[in-house]
Image 1: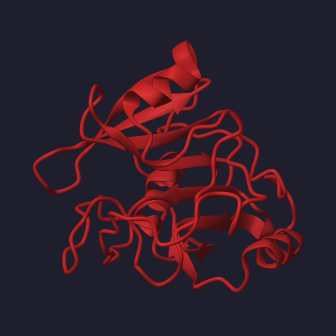
Image 2 (image 1 turned 60 degrees about the vertical axis):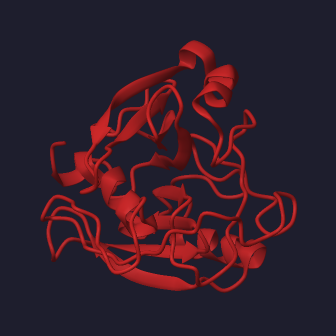
Amino acid sequence: MPMGRSAAMAAGVVVVGLAVIIGFSLTQPVELPSRLVASVPQLLSEPAGALGGDLVLEPNGLRIVAFGESEAAAMATLTESLGTPVEDAPQPCDSETDLVRWVRWGNLSAAFPDGQFGGYVIGVYVPPDSPELRIETADGASLRDSVDELTAVYGNRLAWTGQEETGFSEPIDAFGIDGFDIDNPTPTGMGGYVEGGREDGHVITFFAGQPCGPR
């Protein structure tokens, strides 16, 4: 995958974490930060409708906050809905000195480039430090959906865009909805990752926006 701002979404996924084991870090391009995460195979919270129930995964934001909204306003809304974040720290984009603020609530991370809400990532594998949020897309898809379920929801709006190596035996498959491509993320459309193959796998990540800002 090309690096720089075209790899912004990959950086976001690293923030959330992929399928890795405690004590191991994800194999990744050298420009991206290494993070230790834990596998969380079971839900840690009640089903959607409780914590995070007013948020919806959309191509232009999280419904209650839209991309382009000021950092202060978006943080106020998200904190009111989700409570105090469990992580709030800068992460590099183009270089170690080009930093973007990432804020995390459970398995949901929001990025704030240039003082604005720019992108989000939600994933199955996160540190077990807070309840896992169950937030659906506007069309009703969610984490842990099978490929069959994902395809039933999106049909020909869904396209496979590539594979990413995880450092373990099996790569993960990237998908885009409505033309989204991880190598060229835009504010329209959304993408994600499937673990376990394009036939029998399950969704482990959704993401949207431009976490490092427009190129």
